[in-house]
Image (cartoon, rainbow, N blue to C red; front, side, top):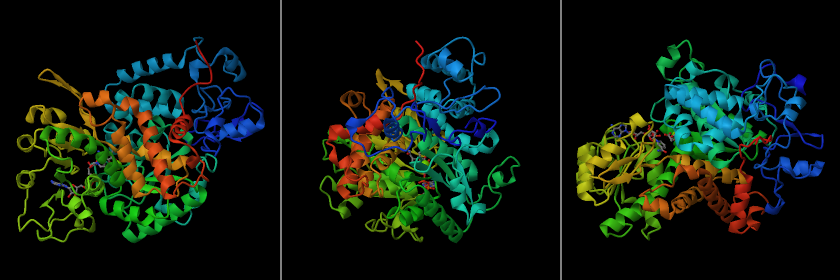
Length: 626
Ligand SMILES: NC(=O)c1ccc[n+]([C@@H]2O[C@H](COP(=O)([O-])OP(=O)(O)OC[C@H]3O[C@@H](n4cnc5c(N)ncnc54)[C@H](O)[C@@H]3O)[C@@H](O)[C@H]2O)c1
Ligand SMILES: O=C(O)C[C@H](O)C(=O)O
Ligand SMILES: [Mg+2]
């Protein structure tokens, strides 16, 4: 086997997943998650290693690799980044692996390594430098990377994900070190299946793909192939927050060109040098990609990410019914906002003394996220007893031309028509402040990509209209946020119920400690994907998405409520993903979408929760160093 390894370390996800079980036979790695065994048969890493227990063990997501491939001299030959423990290898393993003399004499625990990593990380001067540093760690020592991220979530998530991933995508070709993820480009048309065959982990192992075309990365526009950074970032969260095994993830960029001139002219740009394909070419190509993925990986969940507006809606609709797909920007964002809004509305209604359904929501930005969230928020009102039509009337959209109405004189794109107003009696609002005056909303939600548009004037007016105004500036990354936390707090004299897409620092205001919410789909997509993978969902239905939102809302505990939060603390991300996944699985079972042969259906809620938690991969080492 060793002879088959590449001479240099292959990148994360590009290493063959062959592991040796203690019994001696070789098996594929543990990432063929979800065996269909009962929750009580979960095998611990220390359990005996008969061939059959080995087989059972390798079927578990939670599984710590039963044995490790033999890493070799780190300076000359390949190191399997999934198994590398570096200074934590004890002497016996160093001898077994031929590493005596190749590592420093000191033996250190994973915890000490984490501390060293943090010292190194904090010495980097820029956020992008920190991103590059952490990316290098992810492809050399997977377990250490995730241990660092999970123990230091508040510090690390913004570095590997939003907002810094935005800058990383803008510069991805410049900071490129080595391949990570799978690129399927238009040049592969007709042979996409062969490209997918090159993905070097066993068939059946990959369970979650995040697939982008790079055409609308956060609010930063078309980043072409460089957008692959968002797929990598989202999947890092799948591992950290939901315990998906790193080998079970595939970051995918479908490269259909870019209309970003700067990239096309940049000699360092690594994507296809051509303008974006036509709609017809796109559809034909994506059909081939989805077919090939389905054939090779019949249980793979595909998360569509950061497609430009029209294509985001089009491809979701095209594949949703017959594939295991969801669109994170439309549906994940819809869910996370419904979850946070549900908690925010309770606080605002209590302050105003008005019934829960008496909310009026004004969206600033009516693209894939704006309309996706609006659709989802209708269910907030229907759950309060309103009809679909009444619920729709509680929601107003504003786009770059102003309030979206039937009679404003332009042809509306399909996705805006549902919420376009017909009751405005000729009234048009061109600016946000005009719309606020006219509608008198209880909540404003920004998904416009236009920074600082929730001006002091708008915020002050919201505070005059509401005892506790709900203000969610959700555009990413931070510099595109419709307002920052400090501005919102000051302009509303601390009354604001706030959540932004990118994180803002906590602050002290007039003797109170205030914590901003982060209304980012990171709270739900890991749990939705985990649920889909665990119950082998045949599809991801709208009801499963709505359930993820309700589960998220219910995750908020009393302590967090007392702190004024509308979203739970991210330090609890695994618990949150677990609880979201449980509820999504229950909905999948109810709707007949769970294809795991009744396995999940046989469990009560506690069993299901324990099982989901037990299935989560944990970044530990095999070697124990005291
Ligand atoms: N917080 C989250 O979890 C989350 C999730 C998805 C998207 N987002 C963010 O939301 C933003 C929008 O994403 P999208 O996918 O909907 O993009 P999009 O391009 O589909 O939509 C942008 C919308 O903003 C409108 N807009 C542009 N300029 C405007 C202006 N001056 N005034 C009013 N409206 C204006 C456009 O008309 C369009 O309707 C991005 O910044 C993205 O990062 C955040
Ligand atoms: O990527 C994020 O942080 C959230 C969202 O998917 C976005 O596109 O902005
Ligand atoms: Mg996105």
